[in-house]
Image (cartoon, rainbow, N blue to C red; front, side):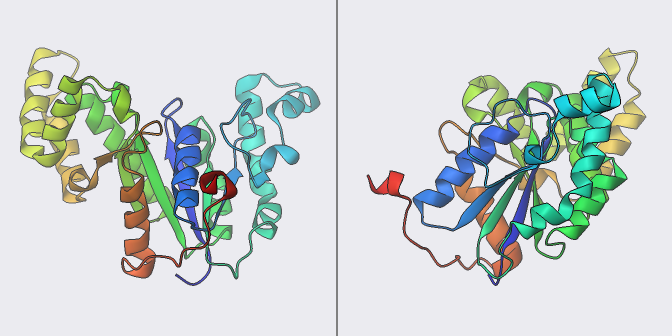
Length: 268
């Protein structure tokens, strides 16, 4: 790896993006890999890590609400655009000559980051050729075939918007009931079972057209998304090595980044 690699952490609200950023940071520290944490959420109240770069130093949701006389929803839209306008300040805080990982924790409301043109310009301006996306699938929104397919579709839309290599992961794996994890694993390892269960679900629900479920499923399967999904847990650290390996495969052909010294916390 020559120079930094940006890792954007995306997903729907409440899927565990900030927790994953903190946990993956701990994994990298444990093995002595240099990295930094960037908070891109101007509306974050509490985050489980100390960011090296924090957009709240320049833009906060509360300030936008007060200055523009907006409610929370309108302020989030304006704040998202203002964050993009501070792209150069974010980039200035990154040593572009250092081999390191730059973990970027994106806003809680995924649509504000993924579907705003300003956010796409932000991504284009920060290590555009050395960026990676980790998309978190909330297992509690993937209890049904249509739920999982919807989550995978959101991930594919994010990939389309940002044009980045990616890894899709199931977050909060430690909180899933064994039966649900078994079902998710079966769907992901053998997509034909997801297809069959989706058809059955559609047949039992008058609001779902079986043809729509099949067509969406086939489009996602053709992208090869299902075969690459794996579980992660911010609590047990499950899946952290999988994320690391996915990034290394893209940017270093699987070769490890040279290790430094573990952090003082790990040494103690």
